[in-house]
Image (cartoon, rainbow, N blue to C red):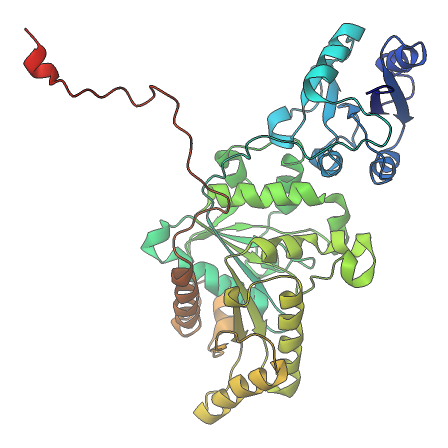
Length: 433
């Protein structure tokens, strides 16, 4: 088509030599390209979201803004990323974070054209780049993810400890169980009397910004809790630290945890508001830890308190999770500190069903007693079986209904011709002399 050319976005230091070279090549028509210089990642995101098609984004990997979130923002607009690197600085994997190719910092015009011809398309007037074609990667096995949440003061963090202990004592999971503190106001360090300040969630997410650490490196950010049989990932050191965690890095970190442990029990904040709910991107990013955990969880345990106020607050959170897209069959309501009287216990379940009204039918709430829990937390010993056993039974029932732990998107793998050897009607032993 007449008028076709490459439309390139560039992100680098203003005085970078390759930045000036590409601009000069485009201005002098040495390459059929339009080059748009950007000096901040915010400007890149604005131009990507403008609706205009772009052939590629050239970005200097030495910039702090270069990470998997920037690459994901470009991929969402069908814009391949060409990384410019000098081989020094931070370690990262092009395949892991989705970079199309890597150019040397002193690349020539020919090297740029070769990369553009291989990985991008020219754009004509009115053209839009289609979605990237090709086979989707085959998903790998991932361990179970159990999200535990609840309004403040209901004992959700204690219930998360009980759930982790329940899985840790199950021989099917080989004691490969992790309790991850993903709450904005992280309490697990206090509940476990953890003297260490790190490593923890912040270091784990930072390690996943540009690469995918090996399972041994992921496990090294956790601590052993031998009295209860699981490992612990410490949470944020202060609530405002969420602003340093990028959403795609959080997703990669969760995936890394599930690739390392058989079961991950995540203690998350009971707030899943997103931009569509309140119109604020900042609120969605603040809540991304909880939103990512409940979205990918095999079971979401929702903990509430007994009584009129407790049941009403529990129902509100259940509605919010349903509105966020959590499948009703994966929700497990729990009423903590439930009364011992059978009639009163039955009234709690009936009250929850009445408050939910015409919402989809959920599992009957698990009623947890309060028996020397504070003593066990203070002494650092295993929680009482009266708390752990009901959680074990309910969680096992929900997981068993779902079948084996298979990651979504797993499909048959194409076998190359000759990979399995060959077959013949002739008996080789009989044919041998």
